[in-house]
Image 1 (cartoon, one colour):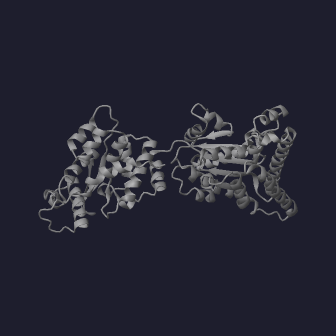
Image 2: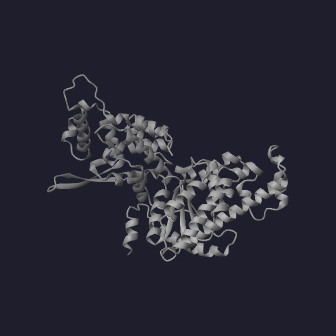
Length: 485
């Protein structure tokens, strides 16, 4: 058992450690194989997952795992840097801060320093041509068109398209400028390759890993430019890029730039050597991760009979047979509700969850029955043919810790009884509830506790004091109206 590795993944609720170990072995092997590919010696992996699947969590832990295994790594949050005019700048900056400055080689400092100096010089030269898009403005050719197989005819063709102002220069000058730029780009790649070669001699394993996160949240134009920079400037032997995206959403964004008929998926795939998708997690693990990542304040939530809130949420999710996407969206709304909840009275999951789920699923009839606290109408909707609903039993104890009985009540029965109490005024609760056994005494205590907390159980003759639970439907609808990423 690797204790250091287990510590890295100690809060791995989605069980991604296996993916991390697999990908480390795969990428090291693939990087070695790519040495034979002179045209594209680096390796680029795309981790393709929708929002909320834990891409950032994985990449942060994966970086620690790689560093524990003595690999040099560089982490880039592309979204935080997309204010930059050109993604080359934050890539180089991250490489400099996280790898180059931290490496020393006492046995051969001169060669390492020479490689660093060469790389710095190459950055300055290429920066003049690339960072300010000088090449595109000067000769009408973008970086994606720069390659060794460009012919003089191709260049001359592009020269014919440039603006009248630039056309005043001779074709020979333009061609010569282009060739110089290409030479500078080749020098940059060689300098980058040299720096990788030298830092790999500092006691670290090869290759180096450059991890790029949040790419799908960037401006489409920035994303395109970043991918092209990686492909044309940083594709050298010994470099592995791991990029996290929601490829489907990213493709939609790119289509918005190039047009609906543009094949965005095919375009994106040309930048990646392979794509990896995480295995589907269990509902239980997914809920735990979502609650943790959404930072839902569990202290504001209450399950029946003081049961574990997460366990009860999972039971309700299974009862409604929600998909992982449904769960993610519903828990996002629950986060919004808990954030806005300003009472010390807890939110009752037995009511808020059916409201959330029915609203999300577009079941207006069920939502209306829930909103009106109409137990019979809701129960009729629950049993309606064709609905994927599965009732479950809730176990609780009655009595004290010495003399007690284990009992159970179905979810539907408890919810129906909840409605009957919520229809009453807090200052006019049925007195039989305080003497009844089973679920009814829990319900009575629940609503009477709210009366005590909110109104101090004062004599309120003639007033209509309504429970806060009657506000749940409005909270749910407001949260649904808020579109969050």
